[in-house]
Amino acid sequence: MKRLPVTLLTGFLGSGKTTLLAQLLAAPELADTVVIINEFGEVSIDHLVVAQLAESIVELRNGCLCCTIRGDLALTIHDLLYKRALGEVPAFRRIVIETSGLADPVPLAHTLMVTPALVSTVRLEEIVSVVDAVNAPATLRDHATAADQVALADVLVISKTDLATTAELAATRALIAAINPAAECLEAIQGAAPASRLVGQPRFNPDQRAAQLGDWLSRHADHAHPQGHDHALQYQSHVCRHAGPLSLAGTSVFLNRVVNELGSQILRIKGIAEFVSKPGQPALIHAVQNKFYPLQWLEAWPDPDHSSRIVFIGRALDTQRIEERFIALCL
Image (tube, rainbow, N blue to C red):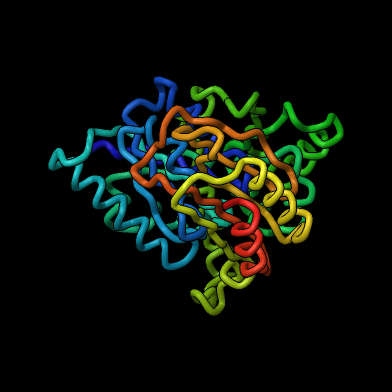
């Protein structure tokens, strides 16, 4: 049986992975693709952006796709292949795994390479890492996981080139070239990059990568979960949820106040909400660190859950204060 190609899509929180994936899924090169999405936190938002574009979509919860989740990944792929054979899911010819922004790609690559149930049915074709040109210098300096994502990539996609200054873009190019000079580098324009440059070109060489993967795994042999898991210790998520619509003006004040009060503790904000001023028309909410992006208005709710929910990801979050601000300003 011909082995199915797998693309591993990585990138730190807010780098633009989901935006890129949504663009790619509209391309003919990714027809008949099954998407596996992993998000950090209890509430999934990213899958809402791509669910209408992929024939099949599966979510893996919760978090970093780093330790115990490896078993879940292998089981998920095995179940998908079994259901495909039975005709219980639409036929697919390719698998794309979008990792959490906090995920190290090494354990996933290792899983795909050595798991007996997978090696005869799937092959890792390439690892694509998305790098945010606006925030790359600080992110790569402060977060080892972000640097690991760059180091293991076969293809690096620089995102937000239209938002970055000339100096920021030059700094990003220099940084990723220093970390991984062998990777092909593309620059996304408004979140999009040519699908023909990203898929269908087998780049991942397991023989060449075996030593790199083995070194990582040996250095993290005592990486117990969760007590020894630095992601679990460093990062947390909190969701604010309301069954009805929110105040648009109040939500704007709320989000700005949270960012101003918590500063660098906030890494990512994302959500979906309905507002009193626009009933029945939800909007996607996005922010990366202290940068807010315009609301993305949707024509209708993308799933049966019509509650407004906003997810905060960061370090040492004062969740009680966030919840109090949400109730006072948004409802």
